Length: 486
Image (cartoon, rainbow, N blue to C red; front, top):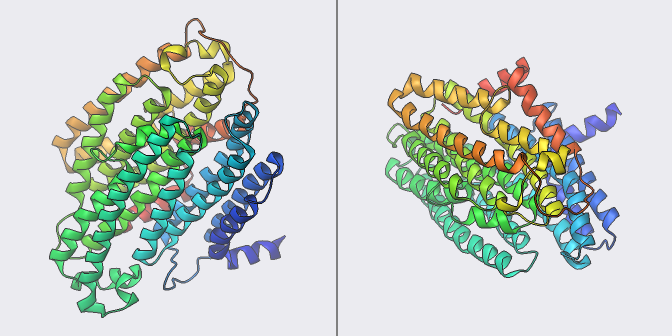
């Protein structure tokens, strides 16, 4: 056993990328559902183990791949939620296959694309080359476009095209920003690939042309900010969540938004290391605050439960961007904690929502009533998830939001006013919707579903424990990364 662990640790980066890529090719050939679903979950579990081994052995950076203290946070979270979502996906997709919403061919495609998505996100997080990072995020985008449209209904295809068009605009802006960074680096490090390598760029950041860096960051923030789902660049996100398979909604909210945020943070560090460049924090804080307030009010107008939680994702990504924009050790710690808690909580909510929509045959909020009576486990699971995502104690999001507000009062007291207003507006909307959906007389018909409760319970338990007690090693780890982010 120890030899196997040592081997995994020594080859962890290669395994984190090779396992999902190789599995995707194999899944394209497997006709049976049970075997492919188990292989999908088993592969995601092995990828998680490989990611955890980064704590044992952290390889030296190369020209294309990098493991540092910042991206380990994202990689471990990415592989954890990727695994639990694959377990939920097994029961969810089984029901879709039984009722004829998916064919066997679509099933093969779905599982293969799921692994390609995990591969692309891991590659984006591990990339030491900013061009390779851009390619990986583009691959993740194209993969999710295909998965959003997998049902091939008019609404699903429209959502997929909308995502493709807006995502292409965003990724084009990010590409232009990446080129500008290379142009800023070329006079300092010379022509060739060195101008794209992150470790080389950050080592020479102080000598780069600040004017080009400033312009580059604007394009990068707009481009990758589209993927983060920040307002007003968010228009693709509600449609993609509403029309795609629910496991993809969980991955989109819980993971892909974080991958784009990781890219923004990388370039924020680059500007922070250049004394002549603008401070990137105010731009991020502004977009984050706008996203929070906008999404908070939009929550009141939603009629579809998946769209409701899509706007909740916009709200929380706004909070995270705002925290990193405020900066400082406490705000950065709060941003990392909030990102982790949001990924776990929002994916748990989609686990519950996915099975609820299957059981009730609808996603319309007006037709979802009394879920705690008709489906007690799913209903109370949804209640716990909504209470957690709304920022109520004793869940972890309460702690992270409290730290965001506290750090804002300490550094920018006036900004704490709109921040708290946005949080209260969103809280009111979620509590209003929860009252009707969870309690009262059940409405509509119900179909039997074989729900998978373990991923839902695991995520909610982790978020609850984090709200009560954070292990000192985790606190020390997050504090260290927070200091790196300035």
